[in-house]
Length: 107
Image (tube, rainbow, N blue to C red; front, side, top):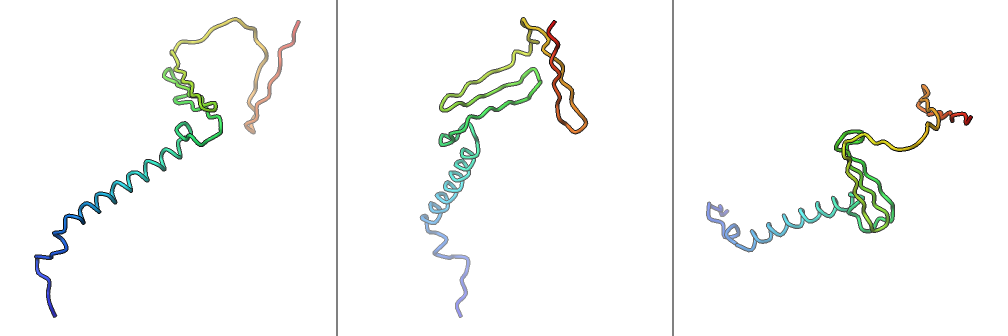
C-alpha cells in the first residue's frame, strides 16, 4: 500500500490550469448566448415585431420598437402633451375588468 504525500506530480501540470480556464470561458460564453437569445431586441433570428416600454407613466419613460430589422427609440420629455382635438367619448372600467367605451353624440 503506497500513500501519496503532499507532493503529487499531477497537480503540478500547467496544462490542467489552462483546461480549467477554458472551461470557465465556455460557461461564460454559454451564459451570454442564453441572455442574447432571451432578449427580444437582440435576437436577430426573431421575425416578430416587439415593443418595449420602460417605466410607463413616469417622466423618464422610454419606448423601443423593433419592426423587422429597424429599431426605433423614443424617450419621454416629461412634459404633458397637448394638441388639437375634441373629446371622442368616455371609457368606463367595469367590475370584471372589461372596458366599455361610450362615444360622444355628434351635434
